[in-house]
Length: 394
Image 1: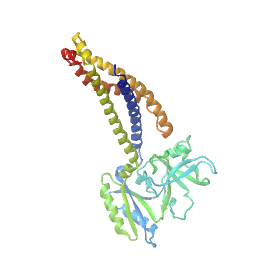
Image 2: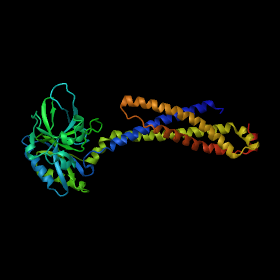
Image 3: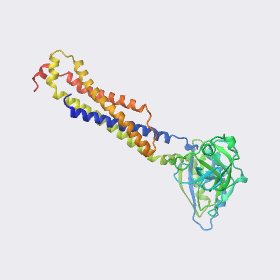
Image 4: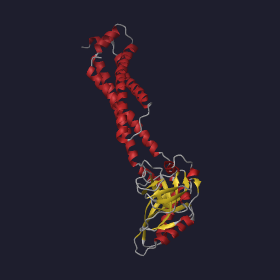
């Protein structure tokens, strides 16, 4: 191995490539797992839109009641609600709940969805304990409303954070406190529903309150029957646009699109890391080919001499393959150390999940195989050098 500098550079290149690929693959898998989380709602068949009034005398309360009645009667509509925020939309309300009244008491952060008694059907979520809202629970919330409803429905994840030692059935009837001192009774628990913020640590912490909204702007969330969402979206837009003047119907969007937009950053990172990993692998393979080819050209006389002394072609190929294996082996050992070190830094700096232990040996084996494949061509070329031609080479 005469070209020690070249061999050292290839070894370092392999080490860096392994470090980036192993950690990059770990990050990609983590992001894919985040994107695959169950939202709790019927993503494929649901959509939402905004209803904004601009007329001073617009009667929002009457409009909401009549709008929802008209929407629910449309063919293909499974159910519809008015709501203050949309899951995974990036915009919404959050509050803190605590199990005891008082200031400076630890609690759990939660997203807040203000809905009516059709919410569980519209979201297509499962009630695992307690009851749904009833008409008597509902109230109107205006811009001047400062207090909270008397009851709420919570996700199982939220109740687990508040009452970790209780079953869902045992949590029903428990009182929690909002704004430090205001009591609310938990009357129902649903299996799963996500907050508006996909990157939030408390993504599954959601509370539903029985509030109809008399704001100048609000949202409607509609679930269509299976397979007819796009047709229902057109019908809903036409129905609402023709019903009343003094308002705008805008921002109609499917939940599939909302979910896709919510994970734009994660999707972009996956694409970028994948491209980097592919490019690094190609560059590393080309570097190995280049070093091996350079080595063959420099050692034609030595190879020819061995061939003249009876060395078989397979022996020449094996020599270069072993030489590459030594260089690559040193590279992946250094790479394994760097991989773990970089991952520790990433975990501390960005709260990432520690790399799975098996990514390291998989990365090592993969790069060793790539190295052997890359060097095989130059090694075969070396084995084909005629002894007489090699002997005459300077």
